Amino acid sequence: MLVRKLRLERGWSQETLAEVSGISVRTIQRLERGGNASLESLCALAAVFEVDIANLSTETSMYEQREIPEHEREALEYVRDIKGFYSHLAMYLIFASAMVIASFFYSNGDPWYIWPILGWGVGVAAHGLMVFETFTLFGADWEKRQVEKRLRRLQN
Image (cartoon, rainbow, N blue to C red; front, side):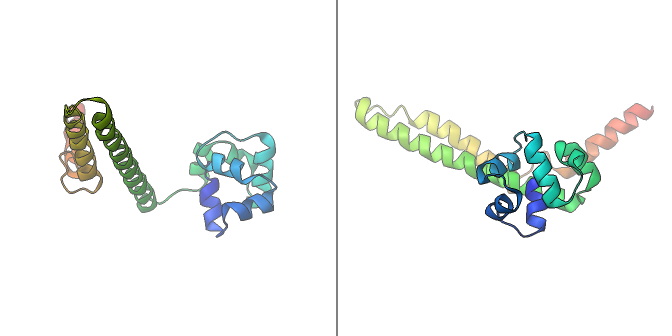
């Protein structure tokens, strides 16, 4: 659902939307994360945003009705990629710390945790390089060349 986009266009917080629509903040949070909405919630949101209820019922119809510019879509994807990387990094740090602590208490000095930390660390580093486009093995230029190559094959 594009409830978040519609809400932000009006400069409203989730709490403001909850007050105006009569829907709980928790429901709004769930809907903004892509959860399903009840008919009652859809009706309330459609009235508040002054849109047709059918346009709120599926995300695809909202995209068709409100075309999102390409640069905005790319920015959203980039932000999601960064968020994914930071989530990955946080989980890595938490579990690496847990492995070191567990090893300290339970494994008589055997540094078994080095290998999983090292392996996972390589994965986190590769993820970061790809997200921040420091090193792109399969970047936009590569994709473009592959598409052109495939189209030439199909034409022959």
